[in-house]
Amino acid sequence: MSMQQGPMDLDQLRGSVAVVTGAGNHGIGWGLCCYAAGDLGMHIVLMDLHEKLVRAAEQRLREQYPGVQCHGLVCDVTSPAQLSAAVAQIGDVLPGKTIGAVFANAGVIFSHTIMKSTVQEWETTLRVNVMGVVNTMHAFIPLLQAQQSESIFSATASIGGLVRGDNGGASYQASKHAVVATCESLSFELARKSPQIRVHVLCPCIVASALDKTSAINQQVQDGAVSAQELKALGAGEFSLAMTPERHAVQVFDHIRAGNFYMVTDNVRPYVDHDLPFAGLAITRERHENIQQLTLDNSDAWQRRPGRAPSAIMKGPMFGEPEPVSES
Image (cartoon, rainbow, N blue to C red):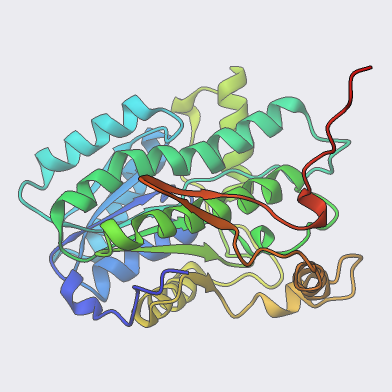
């Protein structure tokens, strides 16, 4: 995956712009903003859904990193129109600046089992976590392609996108599997025609944030139970195994520096290797072993035809041509 991505000199990002969606809940996005501004000297465009969260984060960044420009934009990543408007705003507030990194980080989580979750929760989760990433790709990849200079596109999945789910958060983990697959596809698609764009998928374990709170509030706002004006800046939640956003960001940029496509942080191991019902690493190993044990003959799966592109044909006993049914 992404073999065109060797080690990257992050110093080349200095003075460029880092765009981070979902940066208002004091979690992963906040940590990425702080590292990009403080350690790399990048200008910051942070996006989130609610005005008060955006303005609070914008003010904190400006106070902490006066040497760079920091701009907050209110943007719903489920809306292609709002993302297009955000792209135009970036050109207005940071004219002539190169976009060095885009982090598609906005997300929601509802920690319910399948049978206790609602259709609305599933629709919201997939709309934000999956289509939000796709919409962000549609908005920013053409800009990164036009620039020609090296740049980063990273989407936030989860370790839950690589292993089997546990007892709760089924919609969240399903969405994160989709994010992993989408980033794998994007990396493949850009590898030849736009190798200057480095694609990464972020698969952390728990990072301290207010994601659970903001997800619930977003749903209440959507339902009309709470007005967006009533929102207050939310503090990070506390979880066992949780990594601080700042420490997490250090590991993310270490992965980018090394050219790693799958960015897995070091607090993942106790999560996937514990003794709860799923034994995540064992299940992942079983999946790959099942594939490796297949005995299909695909040695000529790509068939060339004169004057036409190769066509994929599946061979072997599973894909044998059905016998024609004789008409009598």
